[in-house]
Image (cartoon, rainbow, N blue to C red; front, side):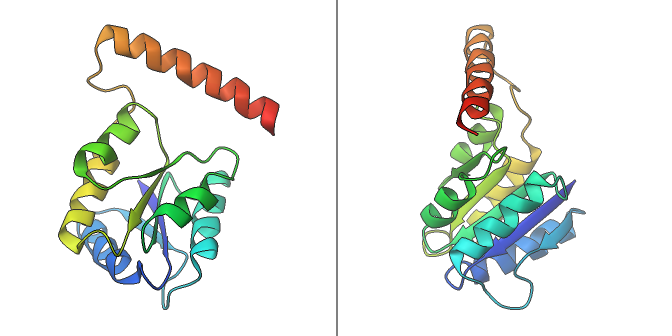
Amino acid sequence: MKVVMGADAWGFELKEFIYNDLLSRGYEILDVSPDSPVLYQDAAKGVARCIQKKEADRGIAICGTGMGVSIVANKHRGVYAALCESVFTARRSKTVNNTNVLCLGGMVLGGVMGAEMANAWLEAKHLEGLSPDMLKSVEKESEELAKCEDECY
């Protein structure tokens, strides 16, 4: 799996920690802020555009709180970004919401927790482990989201 990553100054240290952890696990990484941090808007745009162009399967965008990169990334068609602060929410954002960008806060999370969250999210599969009733509900929501996106864009 190919993962694109980007971070601003407040998320750069966390990005570097997660980057190295993912490399050790065999992931291919495309880094849109490899040598120095960029503005949070540019980090989010870089990650989102790589997802749109299918240059990566999933993306991780990091700023101070994760909020800024989440807002900017979600402005891009076909990008479903989730700001997460726990392993549970990271995993759930994939299984239920089928997110393709994980947003994290470098001022909120330490490296070990960030790496655990990224790994849980990357290993999760959409719709995996849901009850039959929840599965129906999520599938319907996904169809409605696709229609809404077509109308909005």
